[in-house]
Length: 277
Image (cartoon, rainbow, N blue to C red; front, side):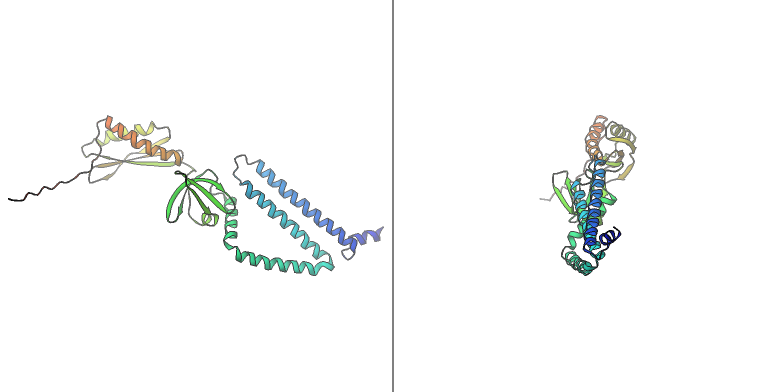
C-alpha cells in the first residue's frame, strides 16, 4: 500500500505525473471559480453600474487564462521529464510577449491606462467633465467607459471618443463633484443707482431654484460705457450653474427694467464734417 502511494505521488512515475496533472488542473479550476464568484459579488454590490460590466468580464477571462497557464508551467517543472518543456514554454511566452508588446504599444497603453482609471476613479459614468480635444476645450457628460476608450457626450449631441491613455495623462476638470459658482456680469449706466441694482440682482438670484446661496455682487469694472456689477452665486452642480447663468441674464435684465435701472449702452461717436462751398 505504501509503495502504491509513493508511486502515485512521485513525479518520476507515470501515475505521479497523472496525479499532479489532476491536482494542478483542479487547483487552477478552483481558483478561476473563486475569481469569477468574487467579481460577481462585486458587481452585485454595484447597483449604480459604476464598474463597466464588459471590462469586468474581460478581466475575469484574462485572470482565468493566466491561472491555467501558471498551472501548466508549474506542472511541467514538477515532472522531471517535462521540465525542458516548461523552460521552452517560458522562453516562447517571453518572446511572444515582447513581439506583442512592440506591435501593440498604443493598445496596451490604453488598456493599462483604463485599468488605472478604473482603480483610482477620478470620474464615473454620468459625470460632467471638461477636457481638451484638438487644442479646444470641450465640456460633456461621460456616456461610457471601457478599458480602451472613454466616450463623452456634449450638450449639442456630439460623441467624443478619447483613448484612455490620453484621459489618464491630461488634466480633466470634473464638474459634477461639489458646488459650482455661477458668475454673471451686468453692465449698468453710469447714472444708475448701484446699491439699488445690487439689491434687485441679489433678490432675483435668490429666487432661482438652482441657487444654494448668493455670495456677493461687487463692482468689478468701470468700463467705457458703464459700471459692471458681477453677481456671484453658488449652485449645487455644474448643470444647474449653467441654467442659472442663462436664467439670471434674462430675469436680471427684466428686474432691472422693472426697477427703472438702465443698462449700459454702447456709445457711438458720429463725426460730421462740412465742406465749404
